[in-house]
Length: 302
Ligand SMILES: CC(C)(COP(=O)(O)OP(=O)(O)OC[C@H]1O[C@@H](n2cnc3c(N)ncnc32)[C@H](O)[C@@H]1OP(=O)(O)O)[C@@H](O)C(=O)NCCC(=O)NCCS
Picture 1 (cartoon, rainbow, N blue to C red):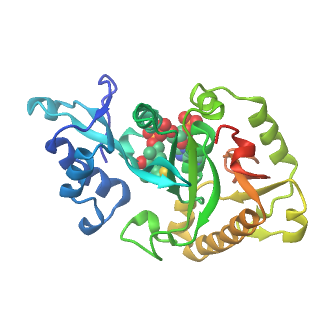
Picture 2: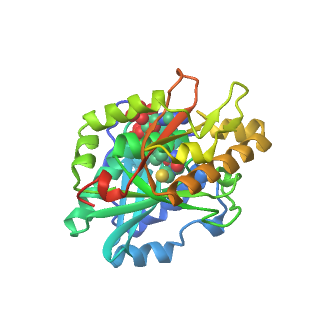
Picture 3: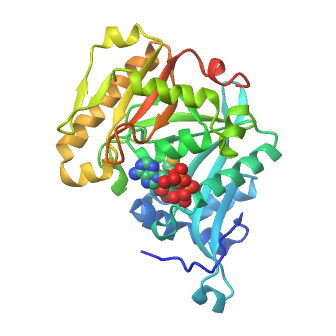
């Protein structure tokens, strides 16, 4: 693991040269623990970059690198142009920050840089996927960035990959980031809006469709009852990676229960609106809030 020297500012900038792009593989391998064949091929990275796609990096000029006059890549975001529901979008395929550089807001700064570049290209929406069992990513995506989602993908990358983060299947929520919406601008400015406060209050009162029971197992509630309401909550463990390390069978139970809950609710016309990372104290589970309606109801600019 790398550790950051506190005195060095980390610079967010575009990856410009082949040298910059060559550094991607090391970050991918450290962050996801993936095999060489699953990393982005250098030639593809060069072509994507040349065709106008977005690569932004977080660079640390450590002593070693300074000697070689080269910045060290410690995090990056890569997105390519897509076409979704008749609009040009940027699909952000990878976001990664090395372990020793996390919780310094670099992930947010990379997303903000990616957003600025997409908007400068005239793009209004960015999409990406993430594992809905990862509380860290759920908090990052919904609370800090303000994404919404109406699509759940079962085993998106196939049943398994070489990544150590993909041992429990590869189910994903497909999230939409409406770049210039009020919701996103407020989240990026760190504003806690009435809508979010109200949603978080609602979470405390709702009986979850999937609940973290006292033994740490997922307990399912009655589906018809839940679907009859305007709002539904789905709980997840605070640290699924730890569950995967200690009890893979339990991790799979969580996958099955949350897959069922997301698919049924989204099919019935709900959208994923919020995530709250601790609803019963620090060590407790986190919870998603889903609301009946469409993404446009939730984000009128969509
Ligand atoms: C996701 C990732 C890029 C975030 O990078 P980062 O530089 O740590 O991001 P930030 O510092 O901007 O924000 C991280 C947030 O997650 C929170 N967090 C960390 N661990 C958490 C956990 N287990 N549960 C809930 N929130 C958690 C942090 O507290 C912080 O939120 P805060 O600023 O509101 O307190 C990084 O964790 C990473 O590389 N993960 C592995 C790859 C990955 O998952 N990529 C993203 C796919 S969407």
